[in-house]
Image 1 (spheres, helix red, strand yellow):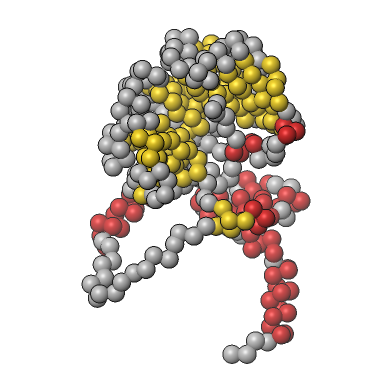
Image 2 (cartoon, helix red, strand yellow; image 1 turned 180 degrees about the vertical axis):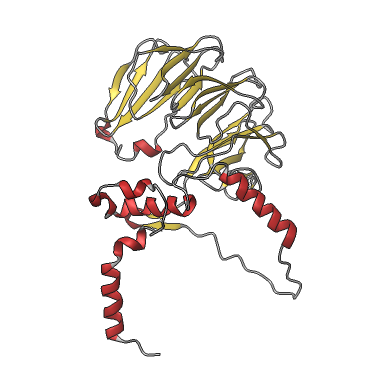
Length: 356
């Protein structure tokens, strides 16, 4: 069939006339919040990408259906049970065509988002990572090769990983990506493995129905005690004394970070919803203090070699990133850096703090 220049021109005109609708879905959703946006906003590509993303999932309602992941998993399992898997017995062989790196405009080749990564404290060649919405992956070759370990679990959305230093076969996987973008999926509680990621148990008692784990930490020398910082306004600061099986909420509001001192006696938690909080009883109770101010996103880190030294950073669109240092175990902080020497443009989305 010959290509028609007239037809090509017609397609170009049609695309020009309907460009906005290529991104935004024309779905009839009663009370759709995206219909209430300003006309200028409705013509922005970023807005229409987000609109398309959510409308596909919330139709015909104006909110995401409750427990949508659970229903999807149930439907998947029913389909597997009813129809099984395709098995080819004709002798045809398959060739692996990937994976290949992605490519993003001026960034060049990129990988997918990795929300969390931890290495086995007893064997650094064993590494676990949580992909943004790809579940847990494990490497026993120092990162040269990887195997998926959670494809069949309740959630593939990754928030934070923690490995028990007393028994590195015990892996905690807090589900839900707390990066606060439109494409960050919620999780469905905590997944725990006691055999190095081979099998998992899903724990939800005491946690929100939708979880966004920003940080998950184990109290040093107390393997069954954990603290978790959960993002979004429905999150908060949570504690478990049962190895993750049950949880209690210690503070409400968005929590960005939580850390223990090396001894495990002191803990610090920060977040735009919970403020700055200090515990001196191993994370059982926290007191609100104000040595630094909270902004949109906040992180804290403790030096292992000198527990009196802490670093704190916060970010907002107005100030960029500011970094502070404490030499008196968090009683006071002094600013040591502003955002002028590195790019903090995406810090609302993807910055963390660690001490070498």
